[in-house]
Length: 86
Image (cartoon, rainbow, N blue to C red):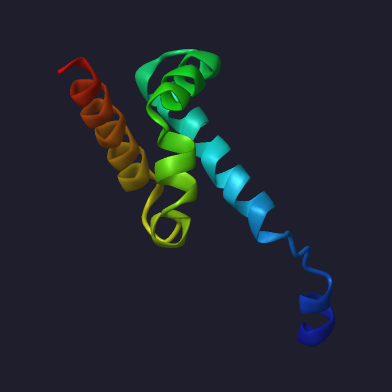
């Protein structure tokens, strides 16, 4: 019975999993900061947080707690924004 149950699980391609993870980060930070998700997405895009940090480090990040990941991504964005203004 368990084998049949496991066969019914949906298997998503890794790229789809990574994009869903990135979307959950955008939404999580939006919720945490009280900002609209489009504003958070725009900010993340400007500093390359999605492509250069979340997707690039997916293998490590997705093993951490959601709260930790959100804090980590926010810190990445703040550091990138600071370095861009210097």
